[in-house]
Image (cartoon, rainbow, N blue to C red):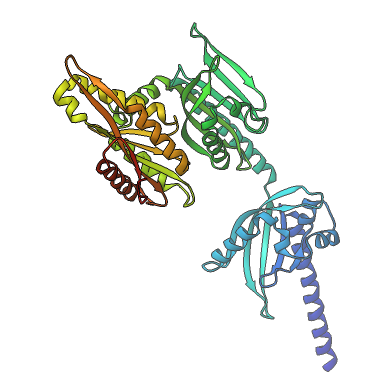
Length: 453
């Protein structure tokens, strides 16, 4: 009886073993016939537990080579540039589901890149370990097709943008820049209205474009160029560029930059409009707004603004001289000789001041017969020498039909930063020195804080 039971149990065990072998064989056949590859790895440590023949076939290697190449680590299996993103996606998805789905790259044994669609389910084994069961589909070819389609779409988009710019400003100068070759194609109309394209090699990297741009505008254009290389987008920049001869023309460039498949800017297009006349008109209006109509000197408002700006950016050890100048006996000129001669007298004084001081000095009419000069980067000796020359220059007789009036000028001088560190304080000091010159008998100068000789 015992022998019969033992034999029965042996038969049952053998049957279970055979059934297990059959199941395992069926599973192996199923795994081998699955498209793509199968992998299992420890969810906590990332250690790769199992890989099937399909996975090895994708990489064209044996299991030992595979494990050695990726150091048995799922983290190292994922391409370095994608690891952080993959970890974040898995951590996020596993909070809500027991399965994850994502796409990433792996680097093969020969350095080739393989794209995978990764679908995995998290399971807890009997010993408590958490394991990801993964099915990986090789989608490298599909990705290549998608990238080609994207490149075609990008090319179409760039061409559309390019010709849209041309249509919007048909008379403009058109630009098409290939970043990698540093080649700039330029299109402009000739005198007969026919558009021609020409190529400029070594355009930006080689410096050919910058050499044609006005020196004062080069930094602006370089900054715009460098910014356009960093981020895809559109923008506008104004600059001066050399035309025929030595003349410069003003242009307003509307540009757009485009990324390639590697998210790197590969191309820029633009349309530049000649705005020289517009700039000349702006300058004319600005001059009218800043200049005194009678003398052409800076008016009071402009003088205050320019002086304040210069002082604000000065260093403490800089030396600037502010002159306050008053025309002596000017009221007598108007009262005795008439306002017409009075106007001529103001113009005479203005010319005298311009002749005595440098072209770089700020010279303005503050109103009536009062003038101001800011002489930058000077010394006490030079400032006093200019004051003496101005006294000599203005001292004269203004003649009318029957009478004449003697004119001269009184000058007050204050120095930055000794007598003031901003416009208001320096102005008060110079005005105080002017008052002292007037009190000393006119036709002289006084330096703030110094007694007269």
